[in-house]
Every structure is written in C-alpha cells, then in structure tokens.
Image (cartoon, rainbow, N blue to C red):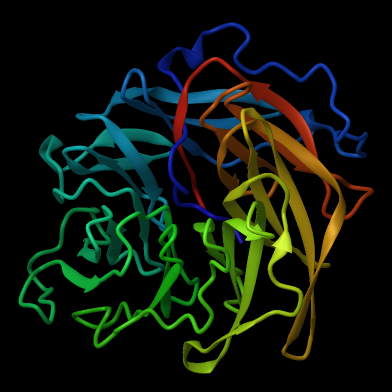
Length: 395
C-alpha cells in the first residue's frame, strides 16, 4: 500500500531546482547492497515537498535516477503544517496556520486554487482525502475529527449538496485525545483511525456515500488500548491495502521505553483482534511512520523510528497469512534515515520509497527494493539541502 498522505512534517526548498549537491549519493552504508537493477533505469511518479523556511511547495519526480523539478515552486499563503494528495491525483491540499489551501495539479505542475483563499479554516495537523475524492478528513487536535466535503471535479469545498447530521456543511465526530499525530482512512473507505498520542488510537466507522460519513459513529472501538505503558504514545497509524490489518506505531510499546509496532486484524463490522506477538519491537524510541506494501509475491510493512539525536532506522517485517491468522517476521537488515524520520511514502510506480526526517542529516533519503534479498530496502541517494516538514506522493 502506498501511504499518500502526509504523516506529519517534511519538505524541500525552492533552490532544489538549481542547488548543487542537492541529490548526492551516499558515500557508503552498511545497509545498502548491490542489486541487479540500477537506479538509472528507474523513474518515479510525482511527489510534493514543503519548505518550512520559505513556505513553498514544489513537485518533483525521479527520472533515470535523477531528481527533476516540475514547474516552479509555489508559495504557501501561511506557515505550512501538513499536506495531502487526492486519490485522483488532481488536487493537493496544504494545511497552514490560516486553514487548508487547494492546489490544482496538471502533469505535476501546481496552481493555487479557490481564488487563493482557504477552502476551510481549520489548521489541520493531520488530513487525508477519502477514496471517492469526496471528503477531506482532518483534525487540528481540538477534540474533533472533521469531514470536509469537496468537489471531486474541481477540488473546492462542496457546500451545495452536503448537509451533515449537525446541520453543518462540515461533518464532525468527537475525539477523546487532543494531541493528534496521524490519521488513516482504510482503503475500503469503511473506517478512520486516529493516532492520538497518550490517548491511544481511536477508530470510527465511515461511509462516503452518506450525507454524514460518520453517521452514528461513536468511537473509539479499539478493544485493546494500544498504549500499554504509562510512558507510551500512539505516533502513527496505517491500514494494509487488503483492509485486513491495522498498524499502530508507538513510543514506549516495548518495556515502557522502546518503539514498537502494534498490529490488529480488522474483522467484519470493524472488530479488532490483536495479532499474536504484537507489539513487535521496531527499534529506536518511537515509530513515527508506517508504510504497508503488497507485492505479487509477499506483503511487507516498514516502520521508521527515531533514535534520539542520532540517525533513525527503517525496520521491515514480512507479513504472512494463513486463513484469517497473521504473523510478522522481522527482516534481517534495516535501513538508515536522517534524524527524527517523520514520513515514509512509496511512489506511484512502486520503484522508490522516500523517507523525510525533520532533524536533517540528511533530510531526504530514497531507496529501491533489493532484487536479491526479498523486502530489503537499499539506500540510493540523500539530500541535506533543505529543512523538510511535509511530503506526499501521487498514487
């Protein structure tokens, strides 16, 4: 599965188009191995980065192993917070301190829409567009989860045909937690999961076809509170592409201090059952990004974890299923990231995984999948030329 929404903060500066040394290959790494596929034969889909110092957003793609800008950097009207791409790849949404802005996408080129005005005034810390391109689900951490109706043809606020149960254009459901890290809409559009720090993970039913997609959702219905230690915190959340597994990245999941990945099966009606062995140690102190991936041969899940002020790590697990029973096995090698990795995304051509680290050193890493060791990520290039805060990719 490609995680296409911003997992919380990352980015890239406008000078990337011409700054020397932006896309430098790493000198060496113990986790990079020789593959039978060379990066120069690979290209990617578009991906979008924010620059926290210049408040700009720009699109890129990787062509024959080279980072290539698309168009010019466009300004963000206010201090940016988060970013999300609509599944139809026509619209990009950027959350700022002044609300959420719409950018139209044409072959990767971005144009600020809605007459340069915010389509909604909430400064969202986490957001994602549902699979029908009809709802922008977001929260600013004010104990409310909101579904903002959007027009799938132009990306603007759709206020003409939507009336929620509270007689408002924007539908809302209450959250227990106020400190929100991430949210994820299940690929089948039936559920929304919210990683709410020390309040654990909250889950809600969702139906995009209803005038109020939350309907009578009361949430949370996670049967086991995902934080088992008093120092723990739910940091990231993702659903596998088959809608079978819920992944929760946590701080303090292992012996109260180590980062871990908690895994649940998603049953009929949203019933959640813990997978045997969960939580799984993912290394570092906290798991801030989770990327599930399905291939023709096997399923995997990758977890990016902090390691204090040192470089972070990406730990991978193979996922096996027998009937309705699942098991995870840790891969033998890990990949390194910059300091404080915050996001993992896969490009739309399934060739690259990109990691963004808000602490830099480097800010951006990209990897290919090893062709001889199943599931292994091989680090190809890095960048330390900008201070990243947000990353999203076309689907």
